[in-house]
Amino acid sequence: GPLWERPLLEVRLGELHAWISTCSFSPQGLLGAMQRAWSSYCAKYIHVKQGGPAGISMLLAGYCLLSYGWNYQHLSKASWGVSS
Image (cartoon, rainbow, N blue to C red):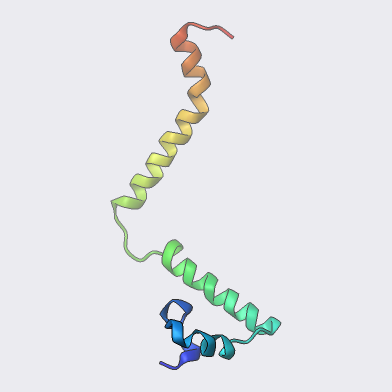
């Protein structure tokens, strides 16, 4: 495609100067770039189309770690016989 439509990661090093010169640095151009970046981030990490056990297992692992962190003081005092 045209140089101005390519994302930064698809631009070759020799084309970088020409690609930067096609960018709009006006407030409206910067706002549009931020909106495209946010949409790309959401499409890649938030609105994932594929489901599977990885997301649920990561959620459960995070819950276990958080729960252990909350109860750590209570568990360490009970195992050493320290009363509070």
